[in-house]
Image (cartoon, rainbow, N blue to C red):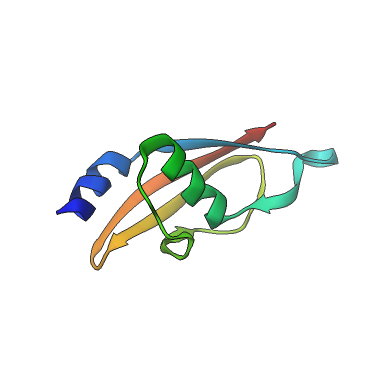
Length: 86
């Protein structure tokens, strides 16, 4: 029941993250699933294991990316991660 509640809370949300970048908009590192999990915890106080945050691809540039948060067996929420310049 808690997983369903968390899914309703997170589904369709966009998490804005900032990162430092060099020339050409390439990030110095990449935005990791750990950082996304920490952001979810910060904004909604929902504990998510970083291994449960599935990113479509490595986030190495600015833009919006799709991710999936697996909350429980068969319960997952689709979120967007928007990365902008710090």
